[in-house]
Amino acid sequence: MQWRQRSYPEDDFLYDVFPPFIGYSNVRIPNRGGWMKMWSHENNGSFISDGTNGDVACDSYHKYTEDIKILKELGVHFYRFSIAWSRIVPTGFVADGINQGGIDYYNNLIDGLLAEGIVPFVTLYHWDLPLGLGRTNSWLNETIVNHFEDYARVVFREFGDRVKLWLTFNEPYEFCRASYNYLEESPFKEPLEKPYVCAHHVIMAHALAYHLYDKEFRPMQQGKIGITLNTNWAGPRDPNSAADLAASSRAMNFTFGWWANPIVRGEYPPIMRELIDRKSAEAGRNSSRLPTFDAEWTELINGTTDFLGLNHYSSHYVEYGNTSTGIEGDAEVRGSGDPSWEQNALGWSIVPWGLRKLLTWLHMEYKLPIYVTENGYGAAASDYLDDQPRVRYYTNYINEMLKAIKLDGADVRGYAAWSLIDNYEWSLGYTARFGVHYLNYSDPNLTRVPKASADKLRQIFADNGFPPNQTFS
Ligand code: GBH
Image 1: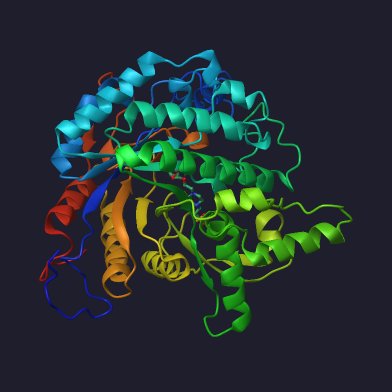
Image 2: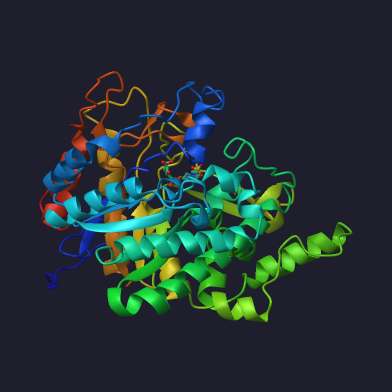
């Protein structure tokens, strides 16, 4: 791509530097055989802020042709969506059979996107676990690793002729720390070690899917496969303090590095190994809460990603701390914000420069291509069409991403906004809105109405950044 020569002062807005791929993340389409729907439906919404369930949500299952149309209008290059495991493998076990109706649905979606020149970017697991696997202890049971591989084989075989960009998992940091709330029947009874056991199995499942793709499908299909991890930028409270810089490094290793290190280098971050082993021994345990990969698995997991996917929403500061519990306690960090930071309706701080710091850190740490697979602004149910706070969020965050690319050399290959349409926001039900299209949930047609942010993104994408002499609000 030809980049226009220009000087780039720090606070300027950049242009002509967009990576080739821009797109939208959206729509986990819940399936009735999956946990998300069952958890919200069977329990009559009792775990959900507004008592609603995910039965209909944005109904992309029936309205996907309309969704392809609005994507086309926005001029995106790609669309990130996930496949519901239970829609393909109803019980979770391939031996019980696969669901042709589910395969037909995703075939129609993929073909419809390609017909409009939109590249499908597909996530295999966005938290919607088949019920059958929930009942056998979900991610705490090592056998899930092979069931995931079986499912991945079906998906690569059925869709890999047309899908060239794959993500195994969405945000394992979130679903491995989820409690009874998210997976009600799963006996997540050992809160202290459960996230580490879950993570261990996710890393193994990821590695099996990677090798399966690499050996059996990539030679013909020629695609790329990675994983999407989420993290805030956890910067040093005082950038001149060695202790705070060390805390920042620990925090990043206990979030992103927890997954990226094993997948890129074959082992957990050394600081995780050291701290969790030590705390486990001090607690009188005869084994560490952080499991170990044996030599064979170390070999298998090492080097199993073509790129890193990043979901990013917010940032905070960290310093040394010994009062936290859980992962933060193990990491010996204490987090804090800054009173000057604006927050969204969910209380997440808006810190655009955090994205630049994070992308630059990822680049220096892992030297891999990066796709920003989610970034966006959560508003309350009262969110409106003239959503100027979201317009500002995207403008400033995208510009900071452009600085990371242009000024710091981060190899960012694509950017996806979350989300195309207002979505069913897990335990927050319909009380939070992330979409650049508005949904009136009592409208039987669920008409997708563009907000100001949709127009803004279309303009940024069309301009390939921010041409000079614009005014910014
Ligand atoms: C993603 O998760 C999910 O992939 C997606 O399904 C969901 O709809 C979307 O984001 C919106 O929530 O308290 O300021 O430190 C987001 C995971 C983790 C992002 C916690 C915000 C806290 C910000 N979130 N994080 S802050």
